[in-house]
Amino acid sequence: MENLSPCPKCKSEYTYEMDGLMVCPDCGFEWNPSESEEEIETGLVVKDFNGNILADGDAVVTIKDLPVKGAPKPIKAGTKVKNIRLVEGDHNIDCKIDGFGSMALKSEFVRKA
Figure (cartoon, rainbow, N blue to C red):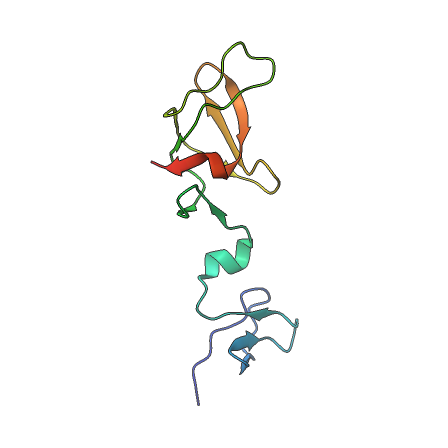
């Protein structure tokens, strides 16, 4: 018999394959076995301007000047931002930028450093 992977949600060992997907009969969860377990568990995949997948703790670089409400100057293109944290929502990167403080950025305006 095949050695099938357990369900990533409930960890049940009674899984089966159906139409190219793996299915758990206990919790009803369906997943693609070719996806990584991290993507399945978090469900949050954030990509930068070039399509690279970002992760918590990565460093990114802004690709254009970003205006900041209430600040006299924008965040310049090429500003390196270290130790990002990924969150749900429109602005899906939380970070701290020197000279600006805590910020929320959109992943479409950064590239992985």
